[in-house]
Length: 333
Image: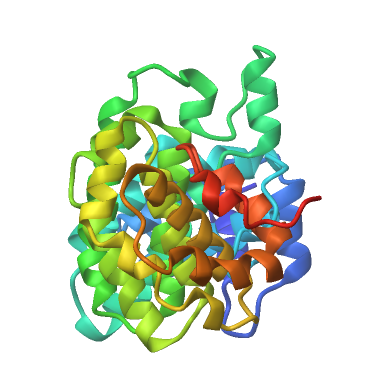
């Protein structure tokens, strides 16, 4: 295929006339030609006729289709590595190009929120570790679904790149806080979740910085605006940040995560049942390390009964001990 035809497919993928679902599915699940990766990187640097935001949207469309949501707002399916093209997209070069764009692209001001939203969606998807990639890595097979899975899980060869990822994501949280878009917060939280769960090096670096304070502020702002699923994403990320030494839990507690998690979980909108369960698990982790506040167990009793299955599922995110008194509230079975 010529460069012009590949670029044409990418532009059709994000056309204002509407997405071409058969094209998106073909690129996500079947396309073996990986020319699009270099073209997307060039477009993100402003070196093709394709606009930067179109390049971000094309990345999101392909990887989002693979994950079960072409918009990139959720990631319901992380089982498959996808086509050779989808695997090649999750490379250090494209991820770095997205980071560079977010750092340098400041104007026109009215377009910045849209670029930031698409950039965070793209990073969230680029940092997904597909289950099939994990399985192949454990079996000793080379897999290109993600650059840190392919080469050196547990090693520091890409340590600087991972640290830079974390630093940029934490920096843009200040900008995200100024936006009313809940989807932007969810994308930022999701990208950080994927980075923290995928890289112990990045996690240790992030845990020493102000990420917990910023996540609490963003989650509080969203909770006051609307109990969107992003609130659950924020609580889930805070639970992950409690992993490791006791000082990590203390840092999250000092960021005022406990008052946030106690913000009327029993009253949260049942349209988002992942919010209250994520808050209950966060409370359980924090109360294992700090003195529980009066009324905490009574506050958790309702959600524990109503969302017992979801809470059990959420416990998989807890890499730190959960208070036995909170676990005891869950119905047996």
